[in-house]
Length: 124
Image (cartoon, rainbow, N blue to C red):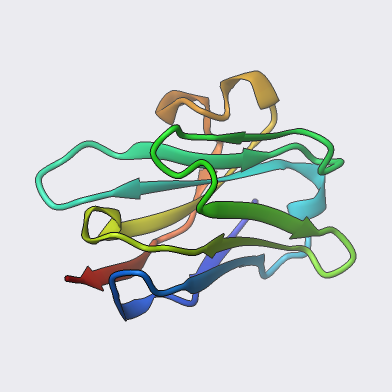
């Protein structure tokens, strides 16, 4: 069973940067494709970014392309999301996600495991 734990959330001003990290306490993260989703208050959870097991393919939502970068370190069983040029509309709870099928990593129902989330608040 994968147990994902996110860290790195917090409060930042618009235009600033944050780096989110996700780790698996059981060190099995390298076996999965990984991704990030987010959920703003009153909205549905939405896809943000995904990275293949081998890190050679990455997907991004249009709303974050050019500002966010997903990466992973399989030797440390971690995945990160570097978020630059943050906007108030990026405010949300960010969830780490693990899946077995890369083609469905952009869909809520394509995820096999979820973390509990970390809050990112961007002030204007």
